[in-house]
Image (cartoon, rainbow, N blue to C red; front, top):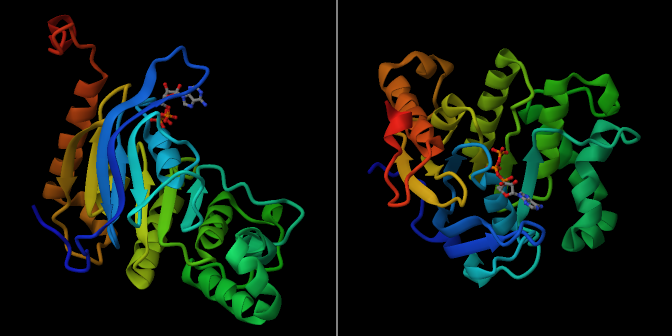
Length: 282
Ligand SMILES: Nc1ncnc2c1ncn2[C@@H]1O[C@H](COP(=O)(O)OP(=O)(O)OP(=O)(O)O)[C@@H](O)[C@H]1O
């Protein structure tokens, strides 16, 4: 197993044997026996069949859902309520239309308690940081534009800046590039690659795009179908910084194919003994 040199072996997140049942779901667990770790500084991707519990995993890590069984630890502390060391970006950029781009990026500072107080006395410093983030994602000069004046890709770049403005320890990305065209998506892969390299932030990416997972991540977890748990783990043996040409590399495509085969198998029905149903495997 290859481990990238900057990764320290102290887990930032540790999920141990967790079951989560949604209240209005008739008692069937969304995830069961779910265990995984996120190492500080790593780029982790989570893939799996639709409905396997990837977003649920995000909610467990951030304290938006508390499991009925098992424990979730972040920085060695039991997660019992929503935590503030996280920045999040989703498929829909959800920028507020009545605020300019820079005002949207500053929003978490007005909400996260420890920054709120500091914002009043250090506003110029925070504005400089917001501008530096805009530059990092190639959005110089749009700070006074409103979201509806930006393309989808630009809005998603701005939402990445918003997720990073309070310098989170953990950046959670839930299908952030899913709604974008292929070229814009690849541009954003490079932006997030560079943000990770420059800031050392720990990233957890949930995605259906296996090429995206292999291109960006150090480690990829594959989840089983519902109830979700981690069924396998892969490390990506590609040197950084990774260029887009990697997408045409044979080894890269072999890893993508392996993941694809695993997810196809995870979607197949199993018999009572847990064996794949032969009728469907052919
Ligand atoms: N609030 C909720 N109440 C009841 N059931 C829920 C709730 N949220 C999710 N579920 C169910 O829990 C399971 C896991 O959902 P989750 O959104 O975590 O899956 P996912 O892997 O992210 O799905 P997708 O890949 O389609 O986005 C699904 O069967 C879903 O229907």
